[in-house]
Length: 90
Image (tube, helix red, strand yellow):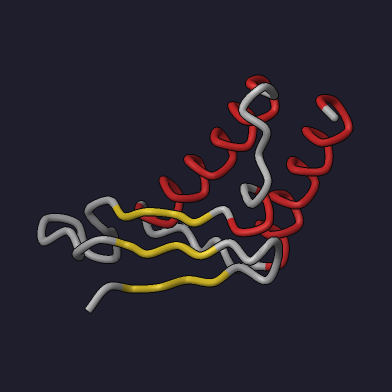
């Protein structure tokens, strides 16, 4: 059964792949649903979209590596990064 992580912001949901048999507490990939960050992306806003994709890819990579992405400090960092991207590109 896949491990599912729901962040308390933007309705971000992470579904981790199978556990890595060579590295305990890590996972073999997975996917991420950006929730409210990706609901209404405008294809013309390529810089904004790329920046949001970068945040989501980093969150997925951290979760796959076994980092607890649900800690208040981590979640605050994601929220700050998303706010900064919105301020810069919208």
